[in-house]
Image (cartoon, rainbow, N blue to C red; front, top):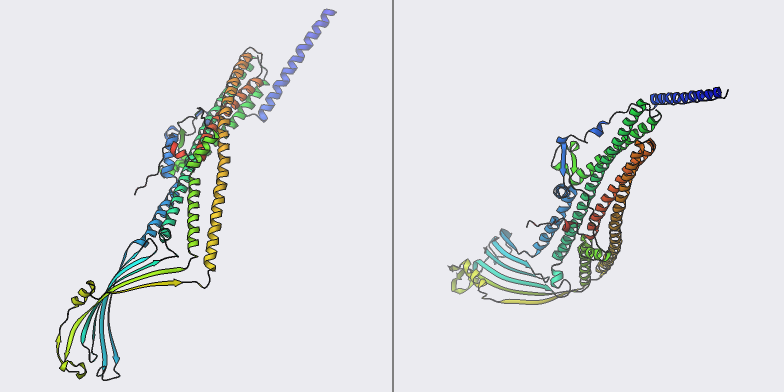
Length: 547
């Protein structure tokens, strides 16, 4: 009886085992029909992002060069210093001498009111011309030299010279002694234009630094996206290999069908990860194309895939906060622009203070007239007889010769003092200039404080990201060893699909984190160069004036 009972228990155990296997297989079959599609290799996994004919390999230096050559924002900003330079040239035109030439010919006719004037109609003809030279002086004054000549012919009675030729050479000098006096204020337009040009040049240098940094960020982000895609593709391949192995073992009857669900679910999840990684590659690729303006050189840029050729650096960069701050104070273009703006505001305050002074001007004149013409001879040398007996011809050149020879010397010295009834406008301008200077000082001080924060943050980020890169490298190496050990245990039946897949996922995450830390480290190095203002120097980029 005992033997029969044992046989009966054994038979019941076999039946329960068969029922369990059958139930699991039925659940798996129904579940696969409803939710799990047939697992096929993704075409994105087997193929590259684009075809080989549409790829473009670029180094970081090449991308920076293309950005400097093609970036529209940089090109637009490059025009600002040129415009400022033209403003300097325009202001300098004030001190370019000018010549004025004029000619006038007129004839007047008027009624005669006396027989002494004319018999009927008084007719006067005159033509004259003048040549004038004008020159502004940097001290605020002006100088002019002019030559005026005329010919006058009239039918008036009792004239002794007709027609009459006249010439006058005149020299004038005017100089302010209080208001507007001095080499600085006399050249105010040029000095202000030069300050504006320096500010625009430093602003352009800042945009240049920002452009270089933007290229580096976009480039390293693309490197990260592409390497992250490779990690995801490798993770998918591992999951697919495990899935194929599970199928083989299920067919051989050494593995229950329920184990297939975990592997297939993980494959689907990693396929979704690849789709996300591919989208990230495209996004960062578009950003890099926009920064370097690749469309300016090539057509159909949407079909071109950029392949970065540089790899992130792991070389440690040693720099202290004090060293970085000293470099930034010397080379930051925005600080240089604020320093120039501060000088400009100080100059404007000095000019506004000068405008409060009275306007006292010294005026000097020196002139030499000359006159000639046809001398009329009257009977008995008496013009009152009205009887003309002859003429002695004169020459125009005689009047000009006397004027140029300073035959008749004349001079004048004068002072003119102008006092305004009210100085409300100039007082307001002076107060405005004081406020503008105070504002510029506050901006400069605020920028120094911001610089202190930026430098400390940038230096700390470099050190932190370097340590992160080392830590994540160690974590990735440990994840690789753990996966290898778990795979060996799985081969001998001491582990499960779940654990192997979990360790695969851990390795992929560790690889991604290590890559992200390396990229962050290189981006932090680029940011440190930016906040110190040394990105141009590091890349050996200089702006050459074509003039």
